Image (cartoon, rainbow, N blue to C red; front, side, top):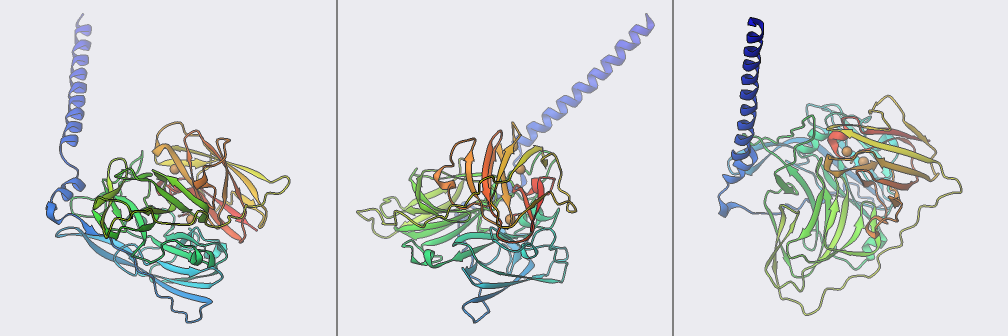
Length: 482
Ligand code: C2O
Ligand code: CU
Ligand code: CU
């Protein structure tokens, strides 16, 4: 009897403790919901009349080789500072500046040298995302540039005009370095791109848009908050590292080269007035013809060039938006035209990657649990070569996303060193905007995407999920091309 009484009282005490914990957790959650986050607090402190900043347009980097068939570029990886919030300094990283980097303009057939000087006190690399390049110059995890050192990539460009990009790739610090500001664009140009009757005046009717989500801590530092489950989504969208950006343009045809430069987030982009636009290029270059759309999906690492015709828009303002946020405000000036702007009905011929009789087929199964992931059940190992592929032979790669739930609904699968073509998505032909050259393809949960891939250059290349925190937490493999 006494025993029984005592055990009841122990249970009662335990029950009371448990309830207190639960109430505590609940109150904590409520508090979290009603107190604004540090990012929101910083934003709220900006006076309304001071919101809105002209969109920063990255400059073209000067080519220091006088020979027109050659190019020489120098990139300094350096520390910087930005004032996103009045009076609050944010420590940043940048190439040749405080944040992001200049646009490198290279011509097809040019022999290019890029010298990268690491002025940080941590290692970095410079990876040319989307470039067909020999393994040793790819700038992947094996080409670390130690503090104070320089590294020079040498390559000749043999691929069609495209908007590609560069970013660091040192294993385990890629996500953090990109988040702090390291990324830049490369424009590859060729005769076709020069001849096309489309807008091409940089900063006037042809604009790069590097879109990135960010969070901040209360002292103004970037908050790259990686939990067991995810990289916390950013509450702020920066475009070309501009907070609350706006762009003043004429009522005319505008070309936007959009990069999803986020570490972890997908974007579904639309115009606030619902107007349609045309996609003219994907990751690896122009599509055969402009594709009309009202909404553009880009997963991390993907690019799209779009033409948007403002010539008949009567209102003075509209915005590029995601479902929940304004990405970029446009202010229009000039007369309203009576007819839509003209642009070519067809763009280029996209050569079909040839497939032989019995192509080698490889399967890549993507799986993730929270921030961790695997490809074919294996976590990334820098000392393991996962696949050996002969140079010059087209293969079929089957990319299967074995996840059922969560994780931004899928994984952007990226391959270094070449551009591939999508053969099918769940057995169906790809949509027209995915029919050109790609280097990153979104594979939704439960989906199977088949690509045909042909490497022209030799060496060791990475393939990975381009959610950078997945990439550095297992979801990467290595292919040796020989
Ligand atoms: Cu943007 Cu390994 O790539
Ligand atoms: Cu890459
Ligand atoms: Cu992923």
